[in-house]
Image 1 (cartoon, one colour):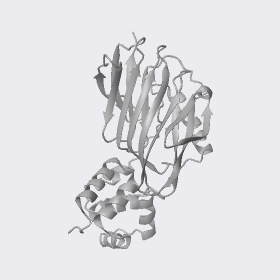
Image 2 (cartoon, helix red, strand yellow; image 1 turned 135 degrees about the horizontal axis):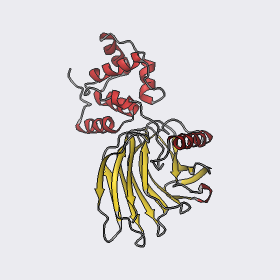
Image 3 (cartoon, helix red, strand yellow; image 1 turned 180 degrees about the vertical axis):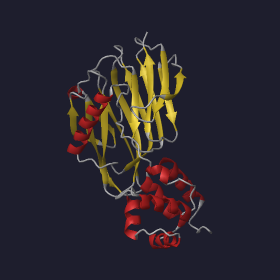
Image 4 (cartoon, helix red, strand yellow; image 1 turned 120 degrees about the vertical axis):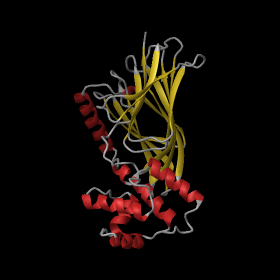
Length: 314
């Protein structure tokens, strides 16, 4: 099948990025644009392959208003990969179910505590009327975590680049989950760049806080936004790790952990987990820099799951 003139190098590069990082609807919309196919033409070619799906459903899928779930819908997605000349499972892998993970939640706790914390977070997100994915895709996220002289999590700062995958997005919900003993009511939220703090909600028992960061613009689908924010904590006991959970595929993520020179760990290592209840894999020793007392990890294309750095005290 010959490709249309719209399949330029730039379009193909954008398509490769969207297929690598998702989410599904952004990848589908990018593929349709790169191939220059209208939805009624896609519907016709699917019908030729024995798959019946409405133009309205295709439209909802590419907008993110609905997600293919039923067996016949998943079969249609597999045929879409053929129609759009995509590698096998390029779209279907972006629909793989993954356990919801909470950004910043320390792992290694009991199953019961994880369930309780998850429920508390869900209630906070519901209070702030959060949709399933917020309408934003992470292009790049640089996060800097500071560990104090008392071995406590002093604070963290984020420099975030996001892309909207639907019109009208004007906020981001940032989640801070402290270490055991954290008092979220005493945690301070900072809006450092291109955003301002809106509503803030917390759950004391779970040690979790959700902050609404408001943009000064309403993004249209495809537009990017750069903003910075942070949390000042210091309310909990000794910290032994920092983890970030990803419910959806994302772009680049860089995590840097710096330690006060008065409290340096004896060992640091990075790890990954498929979910909070899964075993840690991909463990790698990290060398603490002598001058800046820090370690870091860098992931080019984040998959759903958990990334983190753990450390041992003497």
